[in-house]
Length: 239
Image 1 (cartoon, rainbow, N blue to C red):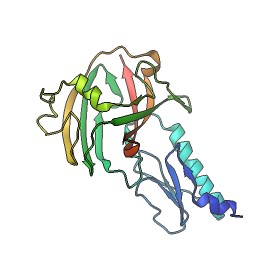
Image 2 (tube, rainbow, N blue to C red):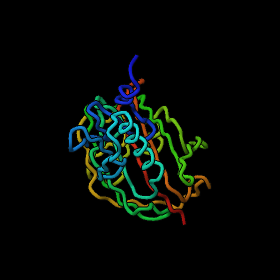
Image 3 (cartoon, rainbow, N blue to C red):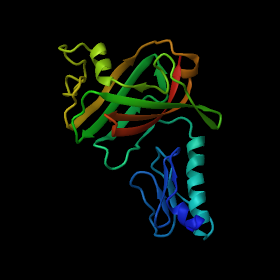
């Protein structure tokens, strides 16, 4: 029988993005322990590594590391953050993303910059599955899918884009200027959007999607094959 300490070495806290890897280290992304044998934690969306200074027992330290990561997740309020959440085989990777102001104001102006690298052409059928959570005190509540808002799965993103921007018409600015496509298929390559301003209209959102702190997990797939996974954390302020 495998000991519980050995099992904890492979523990994956999927809900909080915490991984406990062999070698008694814990990290998100590519961050790793700076000293061999000392587990470290990086709170999701933050560039600060926090050491776990608990006892010498391997199992206890690994378990406490994951709990610390979970606690940071639960208590995180405010502050925009993002993270790739797919495995290394995902062909589409978000390289950078910046959003201001924080919190996002509705209505208001939004400045966005982003960079994406795609190692594979993406075409129909393109599916986007969203899991949207809202902070309620120290808890995160998953929002249902109501009127195509919330934790919804959009099974034909290409058709949605065609409805929003009829085929044959130029892509809207600033996409047109920077050569970013707005219709399927999306060719493999690198796409970059320098800091650009967008107007956020005065839309009437459901009461459960107004002021507050949110987490969103987006998985894009084609024919059951995962292409990309991204986590976002942000705050909304509706006037």
